[in-house]
Length: 186
Figure 1 (cartoon, rainbow, N blue to C red):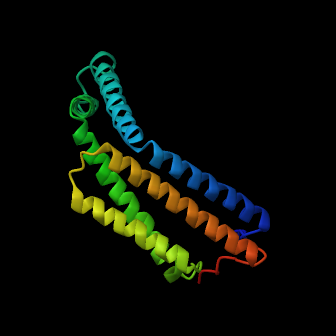
Figure 2: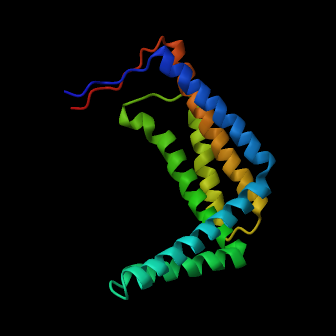
């Protein structure tokens, strides 16, 4: 029989620390928004180029021309990486699409959590979930995104919102003396 984890005051304190840390990181990302997003696109482009080159080398020198899978994947990674580095706006749009998905899934999870019966959420968490969901929809509507600062600000906001949610949940556990336990599944 699996042992159920219960929320203890120690775990709640850790959760609060994690939440506050995420809030601080989120504020920091917002403050250096343009630089953070542009750097992310450059790193992703560079990683794709290196990965593509290594895959091509392996496909040609190590495995010969068969199988063709690594050769195709390597070529695509290399081409995509070069495109992202040469045209960072394309990388920004891909990053924006990924962020939109992150916001929508994260916000949806916060909103749907009480329906599972496993936990209750506060009004603040409900508002934070709606904000995340709306930010995701806003990004989808605004695609393609070419402004690195906007992307950085949105990443910072998501980190900030997630940190606030973790801190709120942890404080709720503390205020109830660590009495939350997942409901048994039948």
